[in-house]
Amino acid sequence: MREALLLAQRARDMGEVPIGAVLVRDGDVLGEGWNCPISRCDPSAHAEVMALRAAASRVGNYRLPGATLYVTLEPCVMCAGAILHARLARVVFGALDPKGGAAGSVFTVLGTERLNHRVEVQGGCLGEACGEVLQLFFQERRRDSAGPSGYQTVGYRTVLYTLAEVLGRALSARGDKLVTAESCTGGWLAQAITAVPGSSGWFERGFVVYSNASKCELLGVRAETLARFGAVSTETAAEMAEGALQASHADVSVAITGIAGPAGGTAEKPAGTICLAWRGGPQPPHARVFEIDGTREGVRRQAVVAALEGLIERLGTGA
Ligand SMILES: [Zn+2]
Image (cartoon, rainbow, N blue to C red; front, side, top):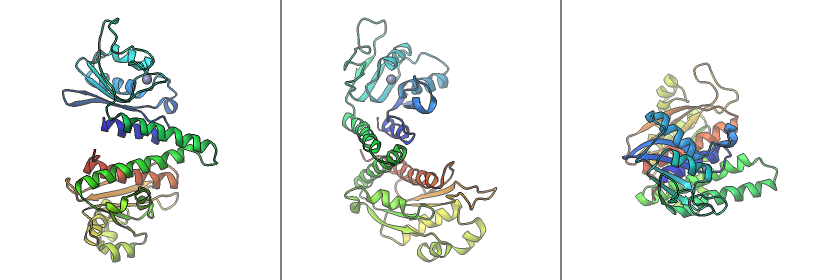
Protein backbone atom coordinates (compact mmCIF):
# COMPACT_ATOMS: atom_id res chain seq x y z
CA MET A 1 0.00 0.00 0.00
CA ARG A 2 2.95 2.28 0.65
CA GLU A 3 4.01 1.69 -2.94
CA ALA A 4 0.49 2.61 -4.08
CA LEU A 5 0.71 5.81 -2.03
CA LEU A 6 3.94 6.79 -3.79
CA LEU A 7 2.22 6.16 -7.14
CA ALA A 8 -0.62 8.42 -5.99
CA GLN A 9 1.99 11.16 -5.64
CA ARG A 10 2.90 10.63 -9.25
CA ALA A 11 -0.71 11.29 -10.24
CA ARG A 12 -0.61 14.44 -8.17
CA ASP A 13 2.66 15.43 -9.83
CA MET A 14 0.70 15.52 -13.07
CA GLY A 15 -2.15 17.53 -11.59
CA GLU A 16 -4.39 14.46 -11.46
CA VAL A 17 -6.44 13.36 -8.45
CA PRO A 18 -3.85 11.39 -6.43
CA ILE A 19 -4.80 7.71 -6.52
CA GLY A 20 -2.31 4.87 -6.96
CA ALA A 21 -2.59 1.11 -7.45
CA VAL A 22 -0.23 -1.86 -7.34
CA LEU A 23 -1.08 -5.38 -8.49
CA VAL A 24 0.80 -8.18 -6.75
CA ARG A 25 0.88 -11.94 -7.18
CA ASP A 26 3.08 -14.36 -5.21
CA GLY A 27 5.17 -11.45 -3.97
CA ASP A 28 5.82 -10.14 -7.50
CA VAL A 29 4.63 -6.72 -8.61
CA LEU A 30 2.76 -7.47 -11.85
CA GLY A 31 1.65 -3.94 -12.59
CA GLU A 32 1.49 -0.40 -11.30
CA GLY A 33 -0.87 2.42 -12.11
CA TRP A 34 -1.77 5.92 -11.14
CA ASN A 35 -4.79 7.99 -11.94
CA CYS A 36 -4.25 9.87 -15.23
CA PRO A 37 -7.53 10.44 -17.16
CA ILE A 38 -6.85 14.17 -17.74
CA SER A 39 -3.35 13.83 -19.15
CA ARG A 40 -4.30 10.82 -21.27
CA CYS A 41 -7.67 12.18 -22.38
CA ASP A 42 -9.02 8.81 -21.32
CA PRO A 43 -11.99 8.59 -18.97
CA SER A 44 -11.07 5.00 -18.14
CA ALA A 45 -7.47 5.76 -17.09
CA HIS A 46 -8.07 5.18 -13.38
CA ALA A 47 -5.19 3.83 -11.29
CA GLU A 48 -6.76 0.36 -11.01
CA VAL A 49 -7.38 0.05 -14.76
CA MET A 50 -3.83 1.24 -15.53
CA ALA A 51 -2.39 -1.36 -13.14
CA LEU A 52 -4.61 -4.12 -14.59
CA ARG A 53 -3.58 -3.21 -18.15
CA ALA A 54 0.10 -3.18 -17.25
CA ALA A 55 -0.16 -6.53 -15.48
CA ALA A 56 -2.24 -8.24 -18.17
CA SER A 57 0.10 -7.17 -20.93
CA ARG A 58 3.09 -8.21 -18.84
CA VAL A 59 1.85 -11.75 -18.18
CA GLY A 60 0.13 -12.03 -21.58
CA ASN A 61 -3.23 -12.93 -20.10
CA TYR A 62 -6.37 -10.86 -19.56
CA ARG A 63 -7.23 -13.00 -16.53
CA LEU A 64 -5.12 -12.49 -13.42
CA PRO A 65 -6.32 -15.14 -10.96
CA GLY A 66 -4.67 -15.21 -7.56
CA ALA A 67 -3.58 -11.57 -7.78
CA THR A 68 -4.17 -8.88 -5.15
CA LEU A 69 -4.78 -5.24 -6.06
CA TYR A 70 -3.70 -2.56 -3.60
CA VAL A 71 -5.35 0.78 -4.29
CA THR A 72 -5.39 3.94 -2.20
CA LEU A 73 -9.13 4.63 -2.69
CA GLU A 74 -12.17 2.37 -2.77
CA PRO A 75 -12.68 1.40 -6.45
CA CYS A 76 -15.47 2.97 -8.51
CA VAL A 77 -18.08 0.97 -10.43
CA MET A 78 -15.99 0.90 -13.62
CA CYS A 79 -12.87 -0.33 -11.84
CA ALA A 80 -14.84 -2.84 -9.80
CA GLY A 81 -16.15 -4.23 -13.09
CA ALA A 82 -12.66 -4.45 -14.56
CA ILE A 83 -11.42 -6.16 -11.38
CA LEU A 84 -14.14 -8.80 -11.72
CA HIS A 85 -13.36 -9.34 -15.41
CA ALA A 86 -9.70 -9.84 -14.51
CA ARG A 87 -10.71 -12.45 -11.92
CA LEU A 88 -8.55 -10.99 -9.17
CA ALA A 89 -8.51 -12.86 -5.87
CA ARG A 90 -8.38 -9.88 -3.56
CA VAL A 91 -8.67 -6.11 -3.39
CA VAL A 92 -7.13 -4.11 -0.55
CA PHE A 93 -8.04 -0.44 -0.54
CA GLY A 94 -7.15 2.54 1.63
CA ALA A 95 -9.74 5.27 2.01
CA LEU A 96 -13.48 4.81 1.62
CA ASP A 97 -15.19 6.73 -1.19
CA PRO A 98 -18.59 7.83 0.11
CA LYS A 99 -19.30 9.53 -3.26
CA GLY A 100 -18.79 6.60 -5.58
CA GLY A 101 -17.24 3.58 -3.91
CA ALA A 102 -18.31 0.25 -5.36
CA ALA A 103 -17.08 -1.92 -2.52
CA GLY A 104 -19.94 -1.08 -0.21
CA SER A 105 -19.92 2.72 0.20
CA VAL A 106 -22.42 3.51 -2.54
CA PHE A 107 -22.69 0.28 -4.51
CA THR A 108 -21.65 -3.26 -3.74
CA VAL A 109 -20.14 -4.54 -6.96
CA LEU A 110 -17.14 -6.08 -5.25
CA GLY A 111 -17.98 -8.71 -2.69
CA THR A 112 -21.53 -9.32 -3.88
CA GLU A 113 -22.81 -12.88 -4.04
CA ARG A 114 -24.93 -12.16 -7.09
CA LEU A 115 -22.08 -12.22 -9.62
CA ASN A 116 -20.22 -15.24 -10.93
CA HIS A 117 -16.85 -14.17 -9.54
CA ARG A 118 -16.24 -13.13 -5.99
CA VAL A 119 -13.35 -10.97 -4.86
CA GLU A 120 -12.18 -10.82 -1.29
CA VAL A 121 -12.28 -7.18 -0.17
CA GLN A 122 -10.40 -5.47 2.62
CA GLY A 123 -10.83 -1.74 3.22
CA GLY A 124 -9.14 0.78 5.45
CA CYS A 125 -5.52 -0.31 4.90
CA LEU A 126 -3.46 2.85 5.70
CA GLY A 127 -6.86 4.47 5.21
CA GLU A 128 -5.96 7.63 7.05
CA ALA A 129 -2.80 8.31 5.03
CA CYS A 130 -4.58 7.50 1.76
CA GLY A 131 -7.47 9.80 2.62
CA GLU A 132 -5.16 12.57 3.75
CA VAL A 133 -3.36 12.68 0.40
CA LEU A 134 -6.71 13.18 -1.35
CA GLN A 135 -7.96 15.73 1.17
CA LEU A 136 -4.77 17.78 0.91
CA PHE A 137 -5.04 17.73 -2.86
CA PHE A 138 -8.59 19.06 -2.90
CA GLN A 139 -7.83 21.60 -0.18
CA GLU A 140 -4.90 22.96 -2.19
CA ARG A 141 -6.96 23.02 -5.34
CA ARG A 142 -9.75 24.99 -3.65
CA ARG A 143 -7.27 27.39 -2.12
CA ASP A 144 -5.66 27.84 -5.49
CA SER A 145 -8.87 28.57 -7.37
CA ALA A 146 -8.98 31.77 -5.29
CA GLY A 147 -5.41 32.83 -6.13
CA PRO A 148 -3.39 33.68 -9.22
CA SER A 149 -0.90 30.76 -9.16
CA GLY A 150 -1.53 27.71 -11.33
CA TYR A 151 -2.73 24.73 -9.34
CA GLN A 152 0.03 22.61 -10.85
CA THR A 153 2.46 24.68 -8.83
CA VAL A 154 0.43 24.31 -5.67
CA GLY A 155 0.17 20.59 -6.38
CA TYR A 156 3.94 20.35 -6.64
CA ARG A 157 4.37 22.20 -3.40
CA THR A 158 2.23 19.55 -1.73
CA VAL A 159 4.19 16.77 -3.39
CA LEU A 160 7.46 18.18 -2.06
CA TYR A 161 5.97 18.58 1.38
CA THR A 162 4.55 15.06 1.44
CA LEU A 163 7.81 13.54 0.22
CA ALA A 164 9.79 15.54 2.79
CA GLU A 165 7.41 14.36 5.51
CA VAL A 166 7.80 10.71 4.49
CA LEU A 167 11.57 11.17 4.37
CA GLY A 168 11.54 12.71 7.84
CA ARG A 169 9.70 9.69 9.21
CA ALA A 170 12.19 7.34 7.57
CA LEU A 171 15.21 9.22 8.94
CA SER A 172 13.67 9.50 12.42
CA ALA A 173 12.89 5.78 12.46
CA ARG A 174 16.56 5.06 11.73
CA GLY A 175 17.92 7.80 13.99
CA ASP A 176 19.82 9.18 10.98
CA LYS A 177 20.48 12.79 10.04
CA LEU A 178 20.58 14.21 6.56
CA VAL A 179 22.89 16.68 4.83
CA THR A 180 22.15 18.18 1.42
CA ALA A 181 24.57 19.57 -1.16
CA GLU A 182 22.87 21.60 -3.85
CA SER A 183 24.13 23.40 -6.90
CA CYS A 184 21.44 24.14 -9.51
CA THR A 185 18.54 23.94 -7.04
CA GLY A 186 20.08 26.67 -4.87
CA GLY A 187 18.72 25.41 -1.55
CA TRP A 188 15.25 24.44 -2.75
CA LEU A 189 15.71 20.92 -1.39
CA ALA A 190 16.69 22.28 2.03
CA GLN A 191 13.70 24.62 1.85
CA ALA A 192 11.32 21.73 1.10
CA ILE A 193 12.79 19.71 3.96
CA THR A 194 12.66 22.50 6.52
CA ALA A 195 9.04 23.24 5.62
CA VAL A 196 8.21 20.15 7.70
CA PRO A 197 7.78 20.91 11.40
CA GLY A 198 10.26 18.99 13.51
CA SER A 199 12.77 18.67 10.66
CA SER A 200 15.49 19.88 13.05
CA GLY A 201 15.34 16.36 14.47
CA TRP A 202 16.63 14.82 11.25
CA PHE A 203 18.04 17.55 9.00
CA GLU A 204 21.63 18.38 9.94
CA ARG A 205 22.60 21.05 7.40
CA GLY A 206 22.50 22.03 3.76
CA PHE A 207 25.25 23.31 1.50
CA VAL A 208 24.51 25.56 -1.45
CA VAL A 209 27.58 25.26 -3.65
CA TYR A 210 26.76 27.15 -6.82
CA SER A 211 30.28 27.95 -8.02
CA ASN A 212 33.02 25.45 -8.76
CA ALA A 213 35.19 27.15 -6.14
CA SER A 214 32.56 26.59 -3.45
CA LYS A 215 32.24 22.92 -4.43
CA CYS A 216 36.01 22.56 -3.86
CA GLU A 217 36.30 24.76 -0.78
CA LEU A 218 33.27 23.58 1.17
CA LEU A 219 32.93 19.98 0.01
CA GLY A 220 36.43 19.02 -1.09
CA VAL A 221 35.44 18.29 -4.69
CA ARG A 222 38.70 17.80 -6.56
CA ALA A 223 39.68 20.30 -9.26
CA GLU A 224 40.73 17.35 -11.48
CA THR A 225 37.22 15.90 -11.24
CA LEU A 226 35.67 19.20 -12.29
CA ALA A 227 38.17 19.62 -15.13
CA ARG A 228 37.85 16.07 -16.40
CA PHE A 229 34.11 15.37 -16.03
CA GLY A 230 32.60 18.85 -15.60
CA ALA A 231 30.53 20.29 -12.75
CA VAL A 232 27.47 18.47 -14.09
CA SER A 233 28.56 14.85 -13.87
CA THR A 234 27.86 11.87 -11.65
CA GLU A 235 31.53 12.01 -10.62
CA THR A 236 31.18 15.56 -9.28
CA ALA A 237 27.80 14.75 -7.68
CA ALA A 238 29.38 11.75 -5.95
CA GLU A 239 32.23 13.86 -4.56
CA MET A 240 29.74 16.49 -3.42
CA ALA A 241 27.72 13.84 -1.57
CA GLU A 242 30.83 12.34 -0.01
CA GLY A 243 32.23 15.76 0.91
CA ALA A 244 28.94 16.79 2.51
CA LEU A 245 29.09 13.74 4.79
CA GLN A 246 32.70 14.55 5.72
CA ALA A 247 31.96 18.21 6.37
CA SER A 248 28.92 17.59 8.59
CA HIS A 249 27.65 15.38 11.39
CA ALA A 250 25.10 13.70 9.13
CA ASP A 251 24.72 9.99 8.30
CA VAL A 252 23.00 10.31 4.93
CA SER A 253 23.64 12.76 2.10
CA VAL A 254 22.27 13.74 -1.26
CA ALA A 255 23.87 16.00 -3.86
CA ILE A 256 22.32 17.78 -6.84
CA THR A 257 24.19 19.34 -9.74
CA GLY A 258 22.71 20.13 -13.12
CA ILE A 259 21.91 22.50 -15.95
CA ALA A 260 18.55 24.07 -15.18
CA GLY A 261 18.53 25.95 -18.50
CA PRO A 262 17.30 27.45 -20.67
CA ALA A 263 20.93 28.31 -21.60
CA GLY A 264 24.11 26.53 -20.60
CA GLY A 265 23.46 23.22 -22.29
CA THR A 266 25.66 21.42 -24.82
CA ALA A 267 24.96 18.64 -27.31
CA GLU A 268 26.40 16.15 -24.85
CA LYS A 269 24.76 17.68 -21.78
CA PRO A 270 21.59 19.50 -22.84
CA ALA A 271 19.69 21.87 -20.54
CA GLY A 272 17.70 19.69 -18.16
CA THR A 273 20.62 17.34 -17.46
CA ILE A 274 20.66 16.72 -13.72
CA CYS A 275 23.13 14.55 -11.80
CA LEU A 276 22.22 13.25 -8.36
CA ALA A 277 24.26 11.26 -5.86
CA TRP A 278 23.32 9.61 -2.59
CA ARG A 279 25.50 8.35 0.24
CA GLY A 280 24.88 6.64 3.57
CA GLY A 281 22.02 4.53 4.85
CA PRO A 282 21.60 0.82 4.17
CA GLN A 283 22.34 1.02 0.42
CA PRO A 284 25.67 1.40 -1.36
CA PRO A 285 26.59 4.85 -2.77
CA HIS A 286 24.61 5.67 -5.86
CA ALA A 287 24.68 8.33 -8.55
CA ARG A 288 22.37 8.88 -11.47
CA VAL A 289 21.80 11.19 -14.43
CA PHE A 290 18.31 12.49 -15.24
CA GLU A 291 17.32 14.20 -18.48
CA ILE A 292 14.42 16.41 -17.54
CA ASP A 293 12.20 18.21 -20.02
CA GLY A 294 10.79 21.49 -18.88
CA THR A 295 11.19 25.09 -17.90
CA ARG A 296 13.99 26.22 -15.61
CA GLU A 297 11.62 26.04 -12.67
CA GLY A 298 10.25 22.67 -13.75
CA VAL A 299 13.73 21.16 -14.12
CA ARG A 300 14.79 22.43 -10.70
CA ARG A 301 11.58 21.25 -9.07
CA GLN A 302 11.84 17.79 -10.58
CA ALA A 303 15.46 17.58 -9.44
CA VAL A 304 14.27 18.21 -5.89
CA VAL A 305 11.53 15.56 -6.27
CA ALA A 306 14.06 13.05 -7.63
CA ALA A 307 16.46 13.77 -4.74
CA LEU A 308 13.70 13.17 -2.17
CA GLU A 309 12.38 10.05 -3.94
CA GLY A 310 15.90 8.64 -4.13
CA LEU A 311 16.36 9.15 -0.40
CA ILE A 312 13.01 7.46 0.37
CA GLU A 313 13.97 4.59 -1.92
CA ARG A 314 17.19 4.13 0.06
CA LEU A 315 15.70 4.49 3.52
CA GLY A 316 12.14 3.20 3.16
CA THR A 317 9.09 5.19 4.20
CA GLY A 318 9.56 4.78 7.96
CA ALA A 319 5.96 3.55 8.24
ZN1 LIG B 1 -12.17 3.79 -10.95
